[in-house]
Length: 231
Image (tube, rainbow, N blue to C red; front, side, top):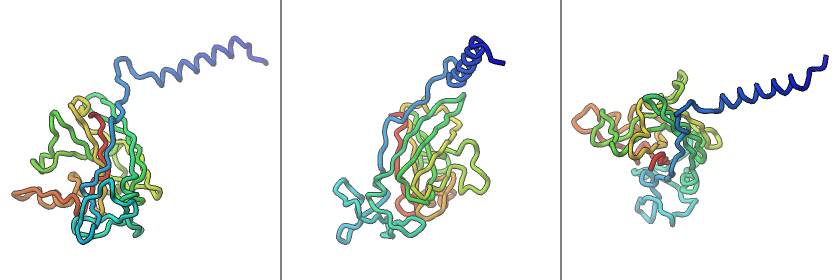
């Protein structure tokens, strides 16, 4: 039996209305906040100029190899040297939104060290965030995966970049980050192949219970990207 055209049109309109309802945010809900900027972080990596270790600059050759502060060459897990060109090619797109008393962030990453171990941290200014286990030294806090990281993950806020250097990450912080004056996200590369949760580097993990917490950025851990979520 042929369905009347009026009935077919009514069904189509109902389906369209349902789809629009799913796409429409709840009344009063703000749209996701898009990141305001992105910085390649060069102060945790070094090139060798003559016999001196120096942070890369705009004048650094793209094929120049990168090293840690002790002069140890940075490599991908397969042994491929990390160059300034590959390091500075990293990029990200990020959105964040407030959900009740929390903040959810979605981050698309490209140009990471292939197969590299990474973790994600957040920080705020006005008011200034601070890691209470390492006060006065570390201001960032882990942006844990949401939903919760799968069993066996290297850390609640960690992931391994794909063989093509890409990654998709969704994280959640139990704070209304967008209420702060400024919000940034650090994308941290673990050159030593070990995470340091809830800290970004092994120095803070090993010293936070002592009299003085010490950072080891540039030794075992390098910040590669700073996502300026609200700047």
